[in-house]
Image (cartoon, rainbow, N blue to C red):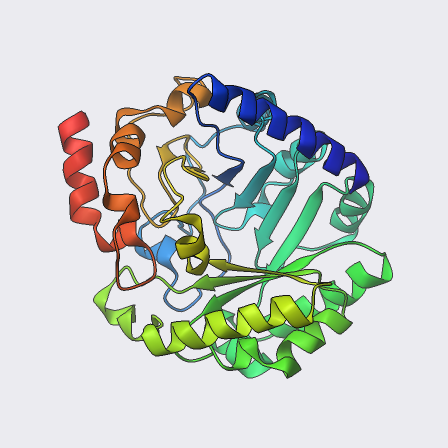
Length: 330
């Protein structure tokens, strides 16, 4: 962590220098390194968008191509690359490559079903790899959404990570069904006792009308944000992040390169995982050029990222406008 802190300061200087020269470099990148997943979680946005499938992935970026992206991100001053999927731990080759880029912190958002001895040894050796396991609250709620036996696997992983003295986090999809449970002292206190150091609350984003009832409304969102504020004050030993709930403190949506952008498993540069639109592929261009794609530039220069909206993802809510921008700039 001390080595990363020094690298993070150096990266921040690179971004400030770029800013002084009129170029904005976001500190975060989200990389979906595979489209394959072994689970069928209820209401999964990625499956609804057909970004996650059961079949063997075809024409996805190779580990060498991802390593090239990681190297360029390091040169640009990007400090954090969130590895997602599908299920990212299916791509051990890419995670091993990420472990070599010690200047970058790689949170790995995983369903927790592929932990084994080799992975525990890798996390021990490469402390810049931080597993963030998806959990929905209690055993009953987690297994109902993710599958029978998943909760017990997650707890076993946490206990082994704690025994080894390794840092890890938890990712919680906040829905109308679990918002009180996942902000309760019982649930969060249990995570803390097991050694969890960060909790990422991801507000459920409906991409189909059938799943809309799971999306938090104003009442649920206000409750979650009030609890997160209290937790930050009372438990500074833990890191609590709300996405996209922290947008208001950031002056609007931070997608499309304002704070981060997304690269899908085939190399398409997208504003956000919830907004799967792309007009450029990093197979054919540099990471820097991708950040200045016509779509990203149009989104950042307009008002759409700053607009008020009902909650969740504004780009998903206003996808017709995003599609119009994509068509106009293609």
